[in-house]
Amino acid sequence: MKAFALAHPNIALVKYWGKRDLAYNLPGAGSLSLTLGGLSTRTCVEFDPALRADALQLDGERITSGAKIERVSEFLDLVRERVGISTRARVTSENDFPTGAGLASSASGFAALALAATKAAGLELSPTELSILARRGSGSAARSIFGGYVEMNDGVFPFGQGANKSETGSSKEASEAAFARQIQPAAHWDLRCIIAVTSAGEKDIGSTEGMVRTQRTSPYYKQWIESVAPDIERAAQAVAARDFSALAEVAEASCLRMHASAMGAEPGIIYWNATTVALIHAVRQARAGGLPVFFTIDAGPQVKVFCPAESRAECRALLEKTAGVRQILEAHPGEGARLCEDFTRG
Ligand code: DP6
Image (tube, rainbow, N blue to C red; front, side, top):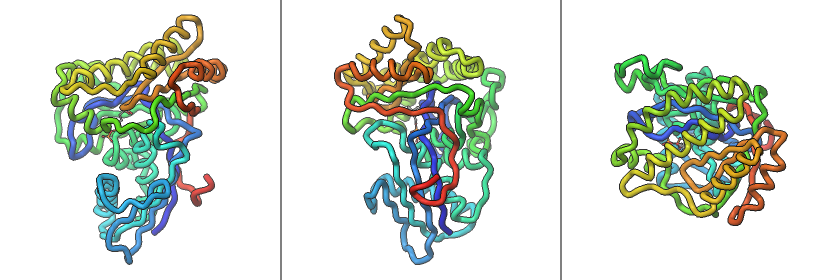
């Protein structure tokens, strides 16, 4: 009744921003990401009949009440329902990257939790089933089940059939069809993701809240959602062909469209600070000068800069010389979620 699992975070090159259904956590559109090796979440789950409530320890801190433990408990309920048990669990989770780094730790967190919890409960799920389950915890977690370059399906339109089908079926049906899959393995293309931390853990508007507000109040939400399927196709082709400049164009466009839809909400959501904007310009200027780099930004002020492995030192130097950058982290294409022996190995 005890298992350890490890998962990496991922960064979307074509963003997920909006939900078709909140109860099933169904995305409003697909997305495309790279799983980031070098940064890991390790999670242990132990179902224990002696426990009266689920217990959570995150990065050494015991969490006894509030949204985090509720989210974990609700997720464990999905696993318990599936096996037909009511046993509570002890969950211990550790990130080896700083939590203030603005990396969606919910992606690696729920991917590792899905794998460790199902294993501890005696279930053997396929990667697709795990991806569906992880999605219920956090949309981006569905992608961290897989390594390398990953595409997420919206559950309504099967992979690659975005524009040709009308929306039919219930959310429950769509839920069973909304999962990620690997489109290229990690070894296909050695891109590096260099993360510029521009703020020390300021409180942002969380992704779920930001999405819901965008969806309810932004006049640009509909256009944003319509832009996603063609962008996924472009990005998948660019990845397959290892065409850096094509990927740069579509990834920056997707990121800026996502943020534009959020800025159009009421009140408008602005995740960027002055350093975020300075980095956008620095990256574009360097690219115009011949350095292969592009940026992407999630629901926070940190900037993730992609480059081919051979340009990593120059890319890093670019970020280092930008005023306001507090810390730099590096990641490379990583593998999918897997079981491990304990917190130190694996
Ligand atoms: C901006 O997966 O954190 O990072 O499903 O509500 O948990 P929930 O949202 P989450 O959203 C990630 C949003 C993003 C873009 C992306 O990763 O695709």
